[in-house]
Image 1: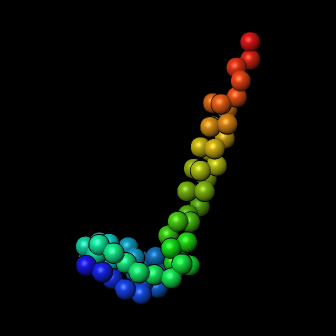
Image 2: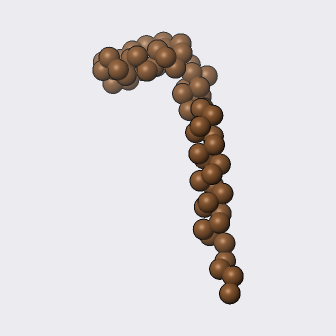
Length: 59
């Protein structure tokens, strides 16, 4: 099932819930799907923890 011309993240969500296998959308809608304040916070925390984990051990 292909849903064409989704114009908002809500349209994409609804298409997925209805069982769509593919959805076409403008690039700006795809970007909106990937952006969320909690995702940004989580990514920042992960990157900081990654840097700490890969620092040389102090002897």
